[in-house]
Structures are given as structure tokens and as C-alpha cells.
Length: 115
Length: 114
Image (cartoon, rainbow over the protein chains, first blue to last red):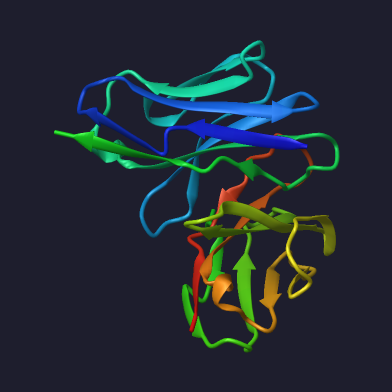
């Protein structure tokens, strides 16, 4: 079984400040991890994914995440927040040979960016 | 390449009715996954189809069903609608050959059950 926990349903930062969105996973086999962003009334867009090639993953719009097996974490960071980053962010996991096409999502974190 | 398209975008039904939602994947993608998104339960996996076969299924009642056609387009059907079925239904397509394949999401169909 696999699961994802996102700590903090709401995160608020000032424009230009560091963004840190937390994600912890549980998986009995090596996981593959994803971060998606969802803007209002839209579908989900991939920010980045961990495929076991490198533990530090860089994505679009200066987002990055680090896979830490010892902490079972895959936190998302961005050095400097922009107003356009305000959205809902989802961490997701898939693992195991029978999980094709199946992502298990966390509950989401709404990011608010203040001017 | 054109993205994933879903039709219709909005739908209003009454309890007891049935509904069919459609999803057209990115050209060349053979896998289509469906998800239900609600404020209370978040994003939940419904099922996945690959080359016209259901390969994975989530924990939803049998009222939720789907199918995939030879051109990879997919439909999902919900019969005997309940108020709790009100949700945003998202489909996503991918090549479907690797666990690490990126799933590309459509804009969703917002279903309201009255």
C-alpha cells in the first residue's frame, strides 16, 4: 500500500520569500514521486518528478524537490515566491508493478502569496 | 500536440440519473486514468485503461464504470447518481509503459447532482 501526507493544508508566504511545501510518503516498495500544481478551474500540471535517477530534482518555474529516503520525504521548494505561484499543490506517489496509471495523491496544500 | 480534452466541461444531473463523461488523450498515449476530486476526499483514483483493457481499479462502487476505444479515447459512466457524486472528474493520459510516465491531465468535467 502507498500513501502521501502533505503537512499543512494552507501555506502563506510573502512575495520573494522561500516556498517550502512538505510531503511525506509511505510505500512498501521503492516509490516514484510527483508534484503537481492546480490553478482554479483547471486540471493538474506536472512540476517535477522523482524517478530514482537523482535525489535532487529540478522542475519548471524554479521549483525543486529532494528525495530523502531516510526521512521518507519529498519536500517542494522554491527560492523566491511569485504572485503567480498562488495555487494548490499536490504530492503524489506510485510504486509497484501493478500501479500503472495509478497515482495516490496527498490532500493538497493551498499556497497564498502576499505582495 | 493537442492536450487532453474532456467533454462536457460542466454537467448538471438529478439523483437517480446516469451520466457519461468523455476523455480524448494526447495523440499516441495509450493509457487513460480517471480521478474524482472533491473538497472532502481530495483526489481519488477511479480506474485506468490501457489498450482497451482496464488495468487498474480504485475503491469505488460498481456504479462507476469505464471503457476505452481503439483510438484510446475513454468514457466513464456513473449510474444511479447520488448527491455525493458531485465532483470534478479528471482524466489523465500517458504513454502507459513505465511507472514513471508523466500523466497529463485534462481540465476536468464538473458534475453537479441535484
